[in-house]
Image (cartoon, rainbow, N blue to C red; front, side, top):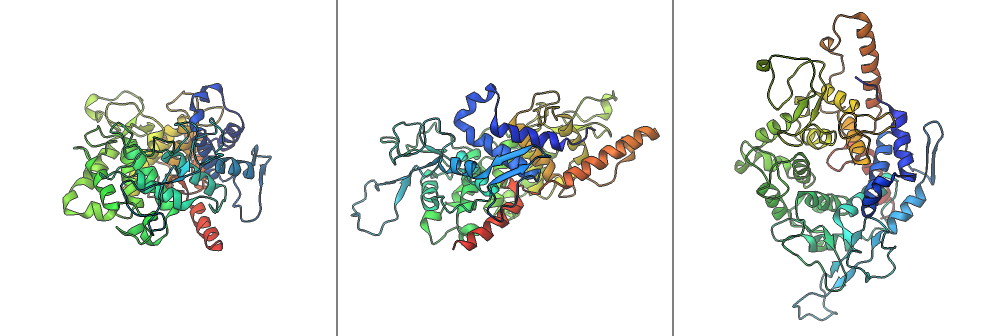
Length: 455
């Protein structure tokens, strides 16, 4: 097992905030997501201050960290789109009538590649808000200690309601470009990725009172929970996993999005206990556990190995595959490991074998690659960090070192003992993650305190 290279990871994410290689140029429209990966990872690593005072700069010379909080916060707010009130089509009511306004374009866009917002009517049809960008914007602002007081909550929540379709799914894009006001085309992306980001936005911005109810008094803060749940359940496959849309193949990413959405809606336990879903929890857990896949190790008789799954051999690193008959990938450590965590079944994984696989994917430059030997990238680096932060909970990793991993060689035993102790101590020091939201749990409690001070 490799040691956890904390300092290298800190420098990797810190440097990535200032300079990115040319390979990232194609992701410029989603630059906000890249910032999100860096900030959340640095927060997991514990180098961001609590922002309890007026901290503007984050300096940590020993760790090689220097970032200007205010500059990042102002840049993110510069990506907040300017919404417009859309006239109710077919309505005979006059503007003076007490009608809940319909918004278009409320939220955040992914980059300033088309310039910052200067008017409520964009000059380009691609200058629009996006659910995924709005989600990462809110998470990043919270991680930086912002109180969200400048977020246009009413416009975003009302836009969210407009983006929900009759089947419960959500459109990803809200445009107030003339002639494109939330045109609901059949080919638009309306899958569980955007269900998840929509539910996260609602969870963060809506008042506490409606979060566990099927209806709420404030119409702008409402989403149709019943239809959202119905759409999620329609994506369940015969294996127990969830596909992106009904009828699609089950996948680790969409499975997490569906389960996490039900968890944030406050209905996961009720759904799993309902007579209509009898047996689903067991099938779902089995499918997730069977995605742990061991790296090739010493030869064993074919009769002793479980085909397409973790063979249980001590000493083998075992990663997670996103679906059957695919190779392991570090990001699924979080997608599938996080799903089991939300289901209270993370202890069924071989946590140390999964840790070992993720640590094998560490780069000497810092960060994590997709597979062993791959160059690091921000997406897989963040989700590797997210899994490691989650692995300390739920009984996933035992504290003591299994002697079967060490053998009888005393020198090897001493080495493994030191390495395991370093890894265990380093991961214990990581900030705990709110698994469903994908951000540090401590930030949510701070957000509640800051919000109460401004009410």
